[in-house]
Length: 419
Image (tube, rainbow, N blue to C red):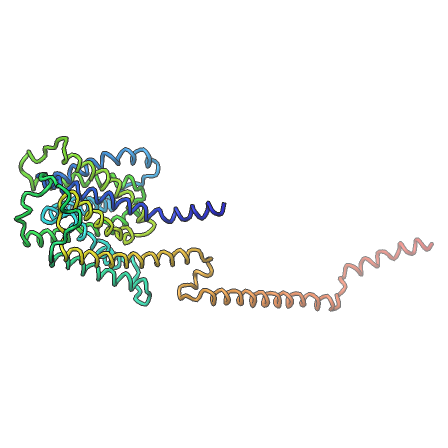
């Protein structure tokens, strides 16, 4: 039984890690499929609309059935927060991300997205979701990791270097239809332009996590919140697409890679991802949720070299290594913070009150000494109260007048008995 309990506790602790690692595989597949669809000429505005339409259709039935009794009422402030979530995630983040993906590559886009934990950490500090105490090692690790992550992302943006060829690059035949038409004519100007678009998308995505964490405090129904965000995101994306795309032919979609990209991105990367991220965020916070993006970069780099014949540059590899080091420094700091929080929650209440200064044992000893003094004081007061009635009893009691009256009335009876 003890072994099963230990195993159950271990699996319970591993759930957030397993969930976030699984999502990174889902995101990696989305990047590859989406890149192929965009290279074939699909408009990224239309792709965002179809993506969230699929997401709404996939998650709404579960929200209506499973949360019909626990769904909170939507007030105007909650509606505005959900509206902002739909604008930040589906509209701003994904449209800028897909536009940047056109000018760069999937691996570079994933690497730039690794700035997400650093941006989220800085915004969480400003929103007072993260406490920053530079005297503690875990806080120092988070700050240093944030700086290293930003430095790695800037290195990937401003420096390319030599092309690094993989061992398997010369032995794999890549389909020509998957390669972008202007791959040979892409310039450094387009690369920097794509980098700027990706940075804006990452900032919007970090803001999405902060607003989502705030919204979940008032609206705790995860499935319903995901369905509403996807639905409002679909409506907002339709409005943006009507403004940016004037040709009706861009809405045409068939049974091809475009449909697969929209369905896969909508079901896996929007509906399931929003829901799982919300669940993990309630327990570990937004910084923990965003700290697993380096794994997606590694997966996409391997898949991109196989499928897209993608070139890897020296600057990208060095910058990616810096990003991974910085991000996992942040993740280590978050792990230490979580363990410290668990230790504090396991301590009894009287000790928690005095435990803020780190002197747990001293507080417990003070409490025990105070209890002992209080008991001694209580017993001395009881003894004092008990001595008062003893002195009162020893004093002479005056005889009430009714007793004297009783003795005069009983005298004739004694005389009668004597007669």
